[in-house]
Length: 220
DNA sequence: TCGATGATTGAG
DNA sequence: TCAATCATCGAA
Image (cartoon, rainbow, N blue to C red; front, side, top):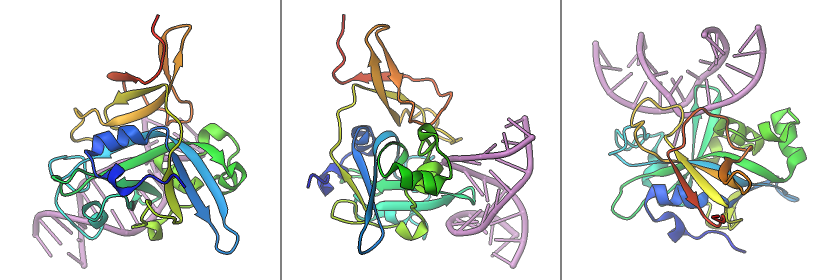
């Protein structure tokens, strides 16, 4: 197997969020004959410790956010707006007390028909292009909180592909700490226009991109 | 206890 | 543009 090990998550949360772009998120459903549902992570956001006003960890540990203070490499699932679950993976460096990466979107890879059933929609671009859509497509609920994603489990993260480029912007749907540029989006490189194109499987947003990491695009 | 508040989505 | 919807959390 090529599951990402715990040390991958034991680094600054922003670094982990950025490097999760292109990795493969797997969901194992069922018991005796489990179905595999998976996708490439195309959008993620970093949420920091007690110094990040937008983070659930800002006011210290509570019943809801306790996973953010536990070992890194575990799932942190919570209910948002009373209707949608959001899926995070805990990650922070040794000198931080908490942190997590919100997985906002994946490009469907395996088990598309299963995801379509959970989502009750056909359009692949709408299957998991948003944190609430993603958890619905993967059937991740509150009881999936605390899963260790670094060992064979119902949720794991494996090596995937190297993104041609990664776009950076401020985080979506927050009112505090909007200056932090901690949202990362998988991007292709348009060689004709010499521009990065954000993945169509990422959530549609009007955030302006403030930086581009070009991984292996060719300059002319 | 009680009221305010979202790391959102889908319909109109 | 806007309502739906409810667990969580801090204040009372």
